[in-house]
Length: 496
Image 1 (tube, helix red, strand yellow):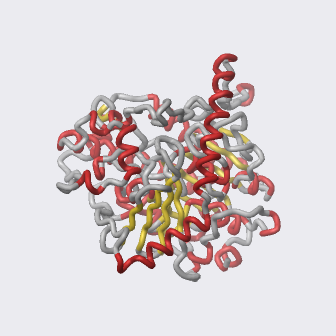
Image 2: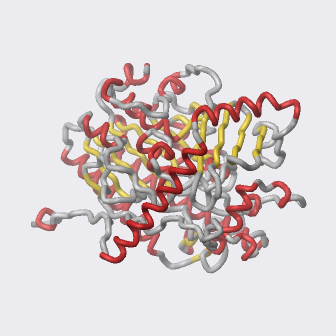
Image 3: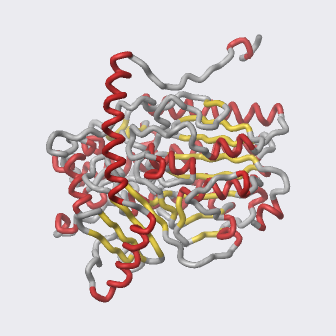
């Protein structure tokens, strides 16, 4: 807590910038030689970079619910992209509101249900996706999920150059409203600090870029995935489930031309997000708010981007489960520090509450732990970081634990995977069952089963789907929608 005590005598502003499906490896800020991210690079130079940050759940809505509450999604009952975060769950926005902050959200947060604020005083935009439970993941009579065709989003016509898209329009609105807010705060200088979340859709699929963003990568070396001859033999049962519903074999995902277009478009979208970060930081600087603002940049999860011939997220490989996490503190304290210890997005809530000066007695129990001491340079040893994924497109509860150099993936009732990430960062050599690592595997399995109850999660997830199917039918028949509509008073805008 030394940083809080020494440098944050006054409650700092907090700017949380979120991308969607952004792979940390594909940024200059994390060492990529080609992808252009000068503003994220600068944020790393002036802040703290976490080199092993993980999503608690590699899917949008559950990941964001967990990130905003500091609690595991299975304890919240949030299993899929139609999962309702209950209104009585305290979020970071609730805590900071009670601490005297003005709490504002611009952009995507994938809240499902009638509560579209969850502690925020106001939202500056609607969400990019519907707030209803339309996307309940129902199975057929055999227990299989219908094919979703997600792999088609990774080849033409869902990849390449477009003059404009509705998703670019959404991010432009998100960005414009956030800039307006920062500039207005700088002009009026209210006494209360702000907590502003700016959450963009990109670089989430579809991978459409403007010609200018495409041209950024003309003639450069586009990194291509490597596929071993025994690729199919490396798949876990979870991988096979996901590939089946994603229909990866229905498209020529691994064709060199398709891979080139996919990666080049993704590079462009990452640079697009980087520019937005730069403009937000410039607005803080221009309004003299930068020196008392904590800036956090992250993403809800990553994207396989045809690594291992897989698409989207939902799995626990590094490309899907790892996220960027960069924190810049006021006065650039701890500038340039890079932290290799594994951490979780769950840790954001207790960390920011520490820095905001929210006392422990004003908080409820949560699963995340504050990163303040880790940034200060103290470490309590090798911590276990968990991930989970259930219900949507998989047939059993799935878990991950990362501790030290090892990652263990446990699919309840099915096969397991154990990877040594130091020796095998590509996660090709499954060490599960190796006699010399028996104790490691046993310890990691016990960590998962001590923390989670797969049988309870399976039953609860199935019951949740059944309930929501009934409610969804009634909502659709009654034409009831939960989408948020931001209010703007035209009598107070521009020249009146």
